[in-house]
Image 1 (cartoon, rainbow, N blue to C red):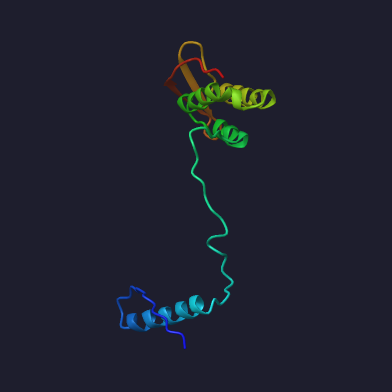
Image 2: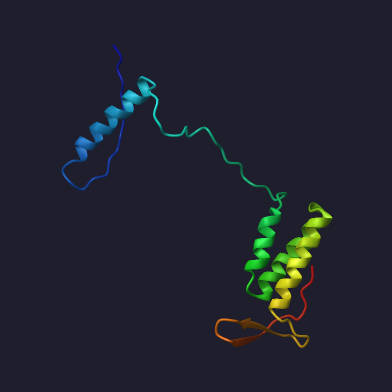
Length: 137
């Protein structure tokens, strides 16, 4: 004889809350007491580790941030990150970052007088905003 005590909680505003609780308790008790296999993945099969401040972004993530940057401030943040983390990437990767960075900066048409324009190709109009004129990596 096997005696199993199972505590369950069910939220149901209707009249079937008790029946649901009893059904879940019975099913859970059988699964756990008899170690019955299920088709569900084992919740302990994978684990997650917290990232540390020493972690670096993957090269693909940096390239994506450069491509997705819509303002010079966003592009400057990527540049600042790369300047701080340049020793953590290979020379080839840094060259790739610089090339993509330069392409993005030229797309934004940075002018020498501190103004920048972003061409809006679908509408054929230009927006002009006051931003810092130089961003380098």
